[in-house]
Length: 146
Image (cartoon, rainbow, N blue to C red):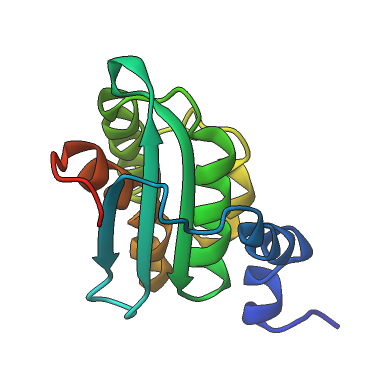
C-alpha cells in the first residue's frame, strides 16, 4: 500500500528542513530587507541580511508564511547562503528555474536535491524560488531597515 501524494511530497527530509528554519530568526540587526510573495500559492517570505565586504552574505534571518516546501526551501537557502553575492544568488536562481522546468540538472546548492519530490508539483515551484528572489531583492536594496 503506497502513501498519498502529499505524504511523498512532505517527506521527513522536507519536514526536517522546514523545522530547521527556526535556526534563522529575523532580527533588527539585519540591515538589508526584502519581502516577497507567491501569486501562485500565497506563500510569503520576509528576509533580512547582513552583508560583508563585496556585498557577500554574512548572516541572515527569515520569517516565512509558507507551506512546508517553502519553509524547507528557505532553510536550504539559509544553510548555503553565507559568502554568496547577488551574482551568485542570481546564477543559482537561473539554475533552479531550469531545473524546475525540466531543462537543467540539479542546481549547485547544498541540499537542494532534497526538494526534488516537489518537481512534479508545479504549484510548489514558486515557493521553492522565494528565498532566492528575496535575497536578490534584499541585496539590490540600498536602503537599510529601520
